[in-house]
Image 1 (cartoon, rainbow, N blue to C red):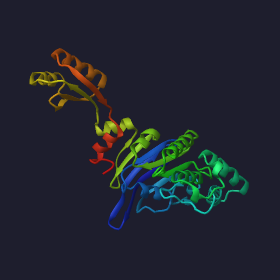
Image 2 (image 1 turned 180 degrees about the vertical axis):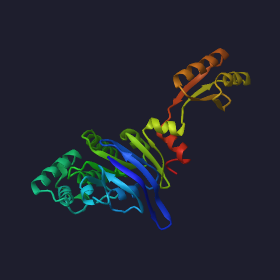
Image 3 (image 1 turned 90 degrees about the horizontal axis):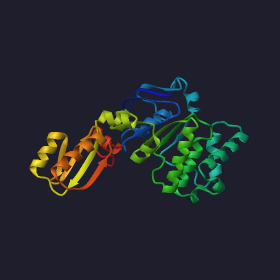
Image 4 (image 1 turned 30 degrees about the horizontal axis):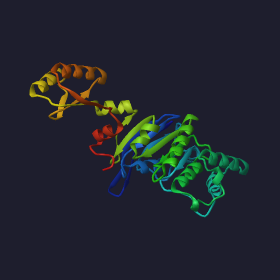
Length: 308
């Protein structure tokens, strides 16, 4: 269990993290979603003890991070946003070097190094120097280095930036396996699809503040985003529009022949709308449903597109 209580961090006049609090349950993937500059990396740097917060407290499995710094560090693996490898060394030597910083016995370290390389799918390239690797392969070695010491907690700071599709999927599979094996993971990203695939709970952060947190269903309720039904017709007279409004007041018309309905219950509301349209004799050309998704939730909560 990770518990963050009102941590803040400023750099001059810039308040990078502003009194944020959250909890991460044992064995879950907690997504930290926000645009560049939102405070994600600063928060992870505080959790990994690279930065000291200006205020607030952090507990790792009930141990205060500041009071039990070394004990907490040994429980944490970190995958930084920047690739942290020695280009002239082989993959195996890189993994052995970083794992050696934890003081593991040599036999155990070599055993764990090979297991980690197998996990990220690069054991067959273990003797090749890192400078011959693609960007995606380097990020997989970064991940291998972070798990050598069997941490119970893994901090991943945008681990798929600039990687190819094959490496990205392999990274996802490794993360999911680690979670299934009981590891607690904090995953920062600005990619919506990654959060939707991987994360059990999500914190949306912007401008150093957490706007909302919870699972996808909870965030939907907080944002009050609803499913949207769009019906394209051949034509809609004013009389038909009025009849639709009388039956379903939440209907709107994005064009003279297009009906849009925010649905409380998409199945029931679709049936009601279809009944009204059929009774009017209007011909339907197409029907489309748009489920409330993380992108629409983020836009509603922050007032901006994640790519802005």
